[in-house]
Each structure stands twice: as structure tokens, then as C-alpha cells.
Image (cartoon, rainbow, N blue to C red; front, side, top):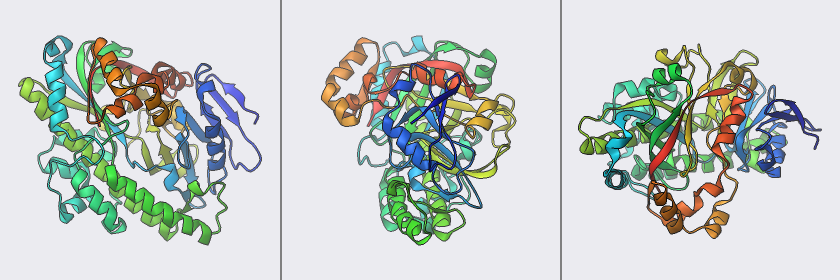
Length: 469
């Protein structure tokens, strides 16, 4: 496969069978870490009907189901398709960032008990059960109203919604399109972190790169304490994906779509299977928004118990597993699939809250639990080059099983503590899966989206303590 470097941090290839080229966004240092399987997966994506312009792999990209994680592709509304493999199983897995008026010295002597209280008050782990009582009617409202439902029940503040992608709710959800098993799995899990790479982290501002934009986003100075939440739609989203992958396999056959990989099962966007999937997927999207909204409320409650003067304000909440209908100057109206990729709109976009339209969208990029996380801002080049998309995290270089073979969770916790970072986990195996060597260098990932001016760093955060599933 002939891969050509076309500009700083950008490589491209186009082989027989591909309808459009594929572009890989990675620094020279990071590019060798992109797995060979990722190239094959994005090549397959470029063969799907109605794909436009080019397909993308972000610098944190790695092998996934159907699309690579870190894959971005846009499809024509008239001739294109939608694929659950381009969204993923954890629909609207995303990140929420809260700023605070606390400073690092105030945590002295209280960090461990605060993390312990957050661990106690916010359910985490595989099969974790909610503090909420969710019946059928409540679940329906959650799926249709998203974070707005949570705020209406007293979980959070109205101003949180304007600082959430899509204001915390996509209106085209249809509760009748999700099945019984998805509903059954969703009821007991609202307001839970889950497991795997999901987390709640206390961080401190380590460096500010763009003071004016940082102030706009509520990041004031080094030493400021921040709170980051990373989770998604839990079992409900997984079941929606699982159910509709089966539907799409049948639809692909009926619609005579030649699939380069069965994991890319899809349907034409104007067909009934696609319309039903979108309506069900948006139910899971809204559930995830409500999930993070409830967790953010309990973070505020818990922190307030330690610091009555604490004020936690939402910077932003971003999705990174979703398909959305958007207008882009270069290609018009399209369905953009972002799988393990974050929306990164530049200044002036009407989708952004009014107070961010002059700066551009906040982009939250968590590192692994032992390294820094970043706050970026979307730039104009992202709108023309990547359909307004950038990376979503550090990106794995080791599978979970290999990471567990290399490290014990207890050893990871001890090493973190030696560095002044306190970790609590429901299962110590999760700490082994998530240790730093299992991930790419977050600084190089951020450099890789900065080189082609897709996004610019605003601030970097250092982890102090983490709750894992």
C-alpha cells in the first residue's frame, strides 16, 4: 500500500476499490504506532456507497469493530449509508469537564477521602446499579429529553445544557424503536460510570497555552481544580447497537450493498432500517447525556460536602461515538460518522452556544490515568479537512488482555500513589488494563491535530485522583 505524506502530520492513500482517499492524521513519531489493521479497516470504509471527499483516521486511532476507533467518514444523504459499526457499541460515549473555584492547596489532606466519597456516591463497575428508580415512563422521558430530563428532576443546572453538545438532547429519538432488552438494561444503570476506560477524575490545571480562550471556557490559572467525567450509554446503548447490527446485515443483503466487511453492515439513509436505527441510536445518545448529567450533579453534591464554598461550572460535554446530520461547506448536507472521534467545530458555527461562537468549540481530550489531559479549541481547518472532527483520547497500543498480563492492578495503584495520584477501582484488573504503557503518548496525539491546525491547545491538566469501574 503506497501511503504518501501530503502535508505536515497528514498522510494519504488511495487503492483500487476505494471510492475516496483515506487520510491518516499523525505526527512522524506517532505514525508508526498506527496498526496495519487500521489501514485495512479505513480502506473498507472508503468502499461504502455514498462516502464523500475522503475518510479519516485520527492520531489515537486503533483497531475496532467495522470502523477503526478514531475513524471519521461522511456520507451523502441521497446516495449514502449509515452503519452501526461507524458509531460503535457505546453510543455517545463522551466526556464532560467541570471547572471549579478550588485550588490545589485546598485538597491537601482531603484528596483521598474526597475520592473515596466520589467512589461511594457514584456507582461504577460492570453491572453497576443506579441510585435512581427508573420505570418505563421515566426511561422513555430520559431517551426523548436527554440531559434536560435530569435537570428538570433537580440533577444539575439549566446552564449546563447550553454547554452540552446538542444542548444535551437530539430531538429525533423514537422510543418505540428500541427493544425490550435495551430498555431492561437501561433502567437500572442510569447515573453509573460503568467500567473499562470510563472514569471520574480530579485534575489540576498544569499549563495554560491560550489565556483568552481559556478564560472564555472558565479555565483561569494553573492550580485550578477541574473534574472530568468519561462514560456513555451503558447497557442500553450496547443493546441498541447489537440489535441493529443484525437488522443492518439483513438490510445490506436486501439492498444489494456489497460489503467489504460484514462488520460494516449498513443501510441506505433514506430506507426504513436506517431511519429506525437513527431514531434508536438517538435514544441512546440522549440516555448518555442524562447519564453524565446525573453524575455531574452527584460530583457537585459530594464536593460540596467537603467544600461548602465550592462552585463547579460546566465547561462542555462532548460526544465521541455518534452519527449526525450536519452541513459542511465543502460537501453540503451529510451524515458524519464519528467513532472514537470528537466534534471540533470552529468559531461561528450556529451549533455552538453563543458564548463560544467567537472562540470555537471546546474539545476535551483525556489522556490515560497516569498522564495529562488536554482542553483544545476547534479551528477552521477541521471544518474543511475532517468534517469538524479531531481525536478523542490517547488511543490504545496494548489490548486489555495484554495489559493485564504485563501489570497487576495493585502495582499500578501503588505507582500512581507514589506520584501523588490516588486511584479507586471496583475491580483492580481495570487499573491493570488502563495503565500508561497501554496507551499512546497524549502529547504526541495532541501535537498530531495541532500540526495540520485542526485544533489548538488551550490548557493541560494533571491528574490528582481517579475513580474507575
